Amino acid sequence: PQATQFEEALTTKYGSEIVGALLTSMALGNETGDSGTGSGNGKFFGIKPQSKRIVYVVDSSKSMNFPHDSEGKTRLGRVKLELARAIQSMDESQQFFVIFFSDIAIPMPASDLQPATNQAKQKFLAWVARVPGIGMTEPYQALLLALKLEPDTIYFLTDGEFDPVIVKSFNKVAAQKYRNHQITVNGICFGSLEGEQAMRELAENNSGTFTFIP
Image: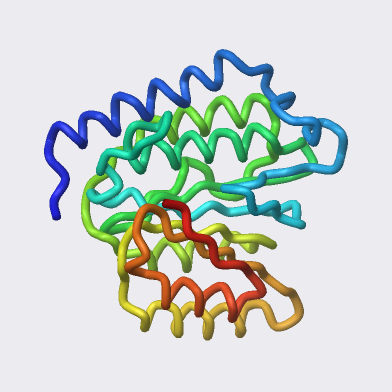
């Protein structure tokens, strides 16, 4: 099914409103008890990373414009809100990077992971709010880019099905790149279980967990 122009408008409108409201209504760095204490956070949909270098790889394809029965209004709006909460909860000892994907990878405008300072949170969450939902579900380029950033943890979220060959290719590249360093990949199916088999394989082969969010 294809999202309508009305649904696309909802994603852009509510995504910006939600993240903007979050930025203005919360004291940056003080959303949770974890922030600023040195313990860190970055928890995404209930999954807390045990690491300091975190990359979020998030589907922004056209199907993410579908309405969602939550404060986010659409799938993408809901995910953007969760991204904002995750990044808000980090302390300055942690680093983050966000990569959206559709037909291509859409990395945030930075050359490397960014320290979770108040200034960086404001700057890059404002960018998150503006990313639209367009195109198809092609995550491979985004996943490879995430690996190049040398994170400890990758969160990979999608609402669609993708070529399972991508998982095998990713696992091979990760094994070669991280021979002496363990990387965790947490797979999240959002709103649909179409990609469950591939996501489970990805998580199981990279010390991560699989989660389904209705």
